[in-house]
Length: 399
Image (spheres, rainbow, N blue to C red):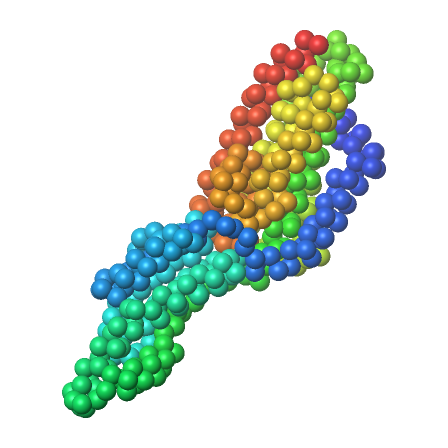
């Protein structure tokens, strides 16, 4: 098996075109996408309602009214949560933002003080948060605060000036409400993307492009099995003392090895040339590279095992890779896509790989939070490997 692996490795590095396509083309694409995504963190084209976590620590009539009004808006869907859980969910990328209404909100309105309201959010959703804040400010400046201010001023005016006219009261109320509205504000606190200087666009360019090119590279490795079958190489190898399984294992080992080299090279390029910080979580990065390489390489072998000819393998792999990359986030950032595509993306290798690298470089999560994605990628690799072994014996060995 290792001799066959060595043979494939020597042939690969002697093929200058393959080496250039494997390493130089992804570098060029990463650089182009890095420039193209320079301002991607400030855009969100989603037409789905914004899911807003809401924590009401005041539990008064005004705070409840705010939540009810937010929930009545078509473009906002509120989800009740406590403050600690809400912050954790935003950090982990489950939600884009959370609104916290602190204790004393009603008292602050009655006493004319600044309202204790905070919006914690993911910096990658700046445009979405900006639009959301407009809705929040509109609601804060609506009937909840105005009623409290009006009642307070009307009571005072009637007490001090029993004969005051309704017109004069309205003028005074208008000026007072305008003044009070200036005190209404929402504290904005980013909790994601603040621990390092790595830009979201750079992470998207590196992770998305690297996995996309990785899929094409390993698909070529898988196709080489059918090429060797067609030119009779596999038949000649079967006459040797080698077992048929050794041929497949050597290809898998070669695909896995090339995947790890290519993925490592892409991140080294991003570190040395594009100043991407690789020190955020070294153990997590190593495990993500291994798991992603394993899942992608096994998928490449699997694609070759389900078809009968090299031409079929090339056509099928191109279609599947492009579709998976489109819905999985390699071509377009996932948070820009509609909700239905975000759910379908769970079926692609690209999604789990890219989200794992987002957790590393953008959310800066600890290893224990990234392990589920690593396990899923490993599970995909195991499933594809076992399926490839079965299909290889039933299709390739009998032909």
